[in-house]
Length: 306
Image (cartoon, rainbow, N blue to C red; front, side, top):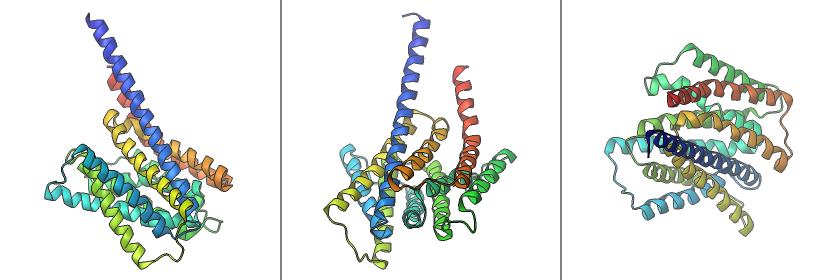
């Protein structure tokens, strides 16, 4: 086989890998969007701590089942274990705040506020990772904050309590992303997934003990809770493998596909079409996020073509 055929075959293989990674990532976003929609439906009938614990019970069983099937070792270095605890605690706090926020907020607006997390990463990166942040990044954060104000619209119909809870969840998820970067090459993906699920489940159980439910689900709603947990667990699992095939910077712009799904699901299942002001805020948040991620995607393809 001559060199031109080898180069062509390599290019085809890389393209197939890229398409597979992007496909897995989009499927994971569908899983997360389904999780949010099912959670929004369930918190209308049951306490948020119960819904949150049900979610992580399913994810806990799924993640540790994967560890057992793949025979992944449990032992990690002490320093890594500490970071895994911090990551799990932050993600657990996300679930504790995110579920109650859905009781107060429409699905689309709530998802949009949650998508401030990439912009919060920019603000926290200098403190946590010692990364330098330029004026363009700060301008993107400012644009996103304007979008947030358009959605929250002080004095409007959007709940201030729900908005504050969702902003705490977004900040927690930003910390999760930063800690994931720190752990990326120190522990296996399955270990990160399993340890985080365990800590999130324990935190959810503690919260449930303080806010014990008065209403418990029947068989139909129990099945819906299982589907909710599976949607989130499968989404996380697909996300891990997508990042193994394609660089994170390449996948980042696709995140906003979930925001589109949130608007569609909000209208289809809850008849909650966002107002023009809220839609404007969503667009600003999406533009701000894409302004940070699209340049990385362009740089990746330029480097790949040289």
